[in-house]
Image 1 (cartoon, rainbow, N blue to C red):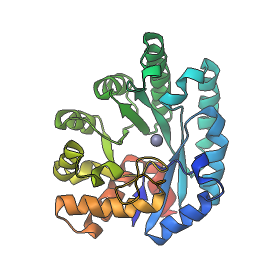
Image 2: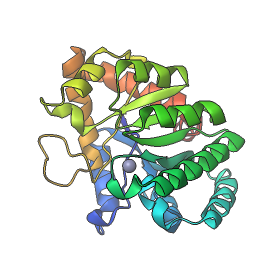
Image 3: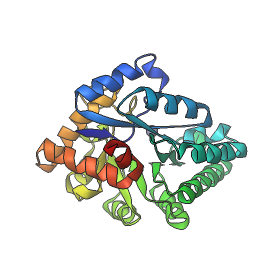
Image 4: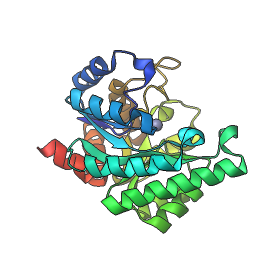
Length: 267
Ligand SMILES: [Zn+2]
């Protein structure tokens, strides 16, 4: 059994196929798909989808890429939405939130500041409700970590992790797991493959980030949640371990960092 800890199953690329793709993932042993929101405008969509697919759950948050259009009122809206969602067993985390200091439009000083403001406010929502955070960390490893440490949410996942071993350890010390996906299937991704092979297995969760970050055998096609099984097998290959063992360990790790997901899957 696999858990895809990060899948944008509501993305427009999937059209009407979202439910069929969740079912196909289930056939590949993907018993759970976590669907992060990206903006206030898709909170309803991720919630609805997580209730229609038997093997899905969701998170609420505002993604860095949507920060240019976000307004402060969105944070009040989000706090209300989270307060209500606490009664919903399929709601498991805050996300996708973070900092993106790679996309030029997001790197201007005012926009960097706005990103930091929204990250901190969302970390506070996570902290106040005792929820883990699903973090987008792009050219911002140390900055995201700094705000996580200062605000102190209940752990989380650094998704599509691509930092140093030292940064990995700092996230682990902050109660985080590190998300690995399609990138580790490319032989040129030396650093990510070293991390995936050498970090303690207790720190690792698997993800697709579908429809993005396709594994090598799908690239440049559209990624889907079923691929997390192949990604997990590739991870097992890098570590010289049996896929079943990696599936068990990464599933435990995902449940450890998302206690509401454990409760949902035990129900
Ligand atoms: Zn994402």
